[in-house]
Amino acid sequence: MVDPQRLQVFRTVVQTGSINRAAARLGYTASAVSQQVSALQRETGLALVERRGRGIVATAAGIAVAERASRVLDHLADFDGAVDDLRTGRTGTLRIGTFSSANRAWLPRVVAALTEEFPHLRLELSILELRGDRTADPDLEVYVAESIRGDRDPTVAEGESDAYDLEELRTEDYVVVVSERHPLADRGAVTLGDLAAEPWIDNDHSRGTCREIVMSGCAAAGFAPRFRIQAPDYTSAFDYVAHGVGITVLPRLGAIGLPPGTVMLSLAAPAVRRRIMLRTKRSMHGNPAAQRARELLRAASAPAV
Image 1 (tube, rainbow, N blue to C red):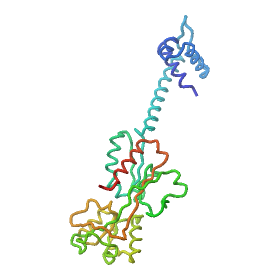
Image 2 (image 1 turned 90 degrees about the horizontal axis):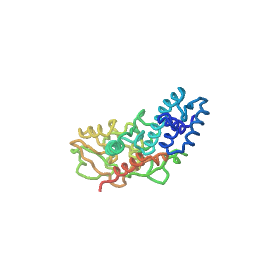
Image 3 (image 1 turned 180 degrees about the vertical axis):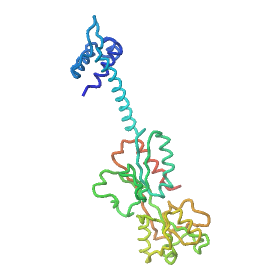
Image 4 (image 1 turned 60 degrees about the horizontal axis):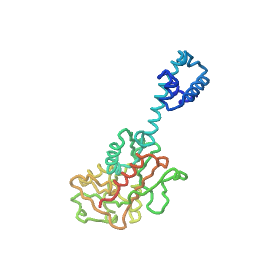
């Protein structure tokens, strides 16, 4: 492969028309410039310059090489700029995976800040519960741990933890949403046992970790929920609650934007809780956009004072 530095030196010689003038522009000695030109001729096997009087002029081959050298060096400069942009997080792609309630409650402000601070950064967002909508191998992933006990996170496969940093963003309680006409609506707080005889509205179509936490809590309280209908998401479940179809239990983070005619009640002890985690690729340590996203997610997930 031809040395790019020699191409740059030779291009300057052709542009200035003189070894001495090229040396002055580049800050080299005339002897160093002459040696670079001679080395380039050996590398290419071409006669790039010829003597004319006391000076030299480019041959036809030399002119052609100088023209192409300009294009090559411009591409290399563009490549170096792109690498620098990627290294500093100004451009490239950042992949973030999350679950529905965190996406709705936290991601809008996180994405707004990232797009303002890194205008050329491409963001790929995926919802973990949706099949076919999960970004492969996300750089950052907000997810619900399978357990809130112990230091080891069971959702990380063996060997995978070496590639990721894990941190807890929040541990939060579950709540129950009832119709404002429901006999429990004025209670403020209820236990899972108070809901044993109620018709339930299922709100987790993926039957994922959040639903399993509820089911385990109900089992500990001595009953299994009697689901009347399966709603596709929290918002739809709220609408059914407002019309008196049943009650629905969900994490507090998901209980935003409740429609008129509904009331949110706390679940008293023994509380049902979930742990929200952030998993970040260690290969993204040096990426400012990824680190800024982590800061923004921490701020967004911090409980309101």
